[in-house]
Image (cartoon, rainbow, N blue to C red; front, side, top):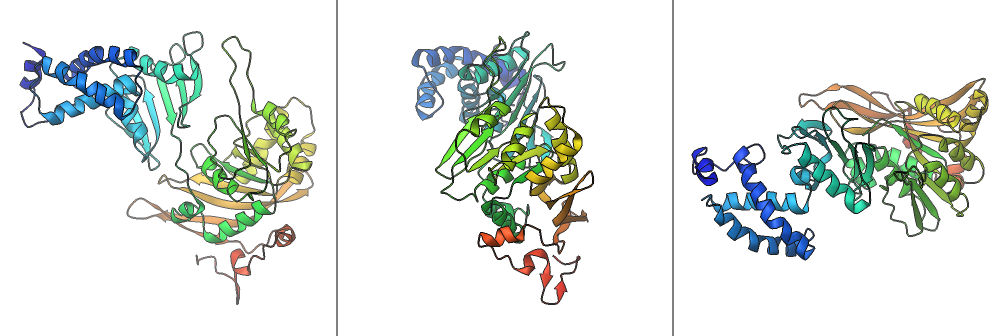
Length: 448
């Protein structure tokens, strides 16, 4: 029995053939890939309309030669899969193109998950085997001059659109080759975040004043909470006339100002040389005459250099840190300063933090997958051995509705920050309503 006979025997004529999980369908696709791939190499084809036209001309006779007798709609689906296999990233290509998907996770050849609207779901798509996954990994890494093998089983990379890619293969991975792609986020504006309920117009007005008035700001939050997106929005408030230096592990910030210099860390070569870490870039940025330093995320000893920069004339710097609360953010910064290799007393470190940082914005991903600014806090100073903070805005969660969405409301605490004079000196006369006051006094905690 031929391949086409076996395909037809397994499905009704009106039924569209299965895509990724049907063995015979995969067999047909594999044959067509083998016939069309030499054409890609001969013509140095890359993804685009012209490549599709050339491949379609070759695909039609090759498809007919299989004698499958399938409808045109099935041929189009098969052609698309062949193109994705030859020019794209195979089974994960459709997910990378889907704007509603924020993360793609390949857990070995048989399981592919995606994150959509904050929720993880299994896709049903599969790779053929581990060798298939490794081919796609090499297709991702080869243009970037990177490689992964048993001696170097882990690698971080970045796709041309800016999406972050992490790869880990056996023997370090017991599930087989694993790919995790954090897709390049769309460029959100502050209006978008207000519409999504991430923060309120009053909070926007306050944070804009803080950025323009050159208050040092830290965005704190967990993994996937939207720290980088919020940092990008806050950075958009920096005046156009200022010179900005951005420092990132993997370039994600999309600042619209013209006078922006982007610096990116570089992993070491396989021989262990040539690496450039965030701390090196922070030090170098101080010699580039920046008005602002924006660090995508502090993770280690660069925290000390960042604090010193904030304390020595580089006001208005912004960064993010992994932490679950403003208090946790301060503790994390303490730990990271110690990672710089200096045996500093804890009190000295806390004094540096209290003197350097003015505002901590806490971002969180809630139970329903939504991302919100859950608090905006002022760093007041020191009392004894403790860094003192006070909340300016809070999000109060009140439960879940019938659609499994978090219900809650923002409220101002009624506290005016101690740096209000700095805001006023920059021309920001924030009305009392921003801080929760009405003509009759402090607004009720139970009202929005």
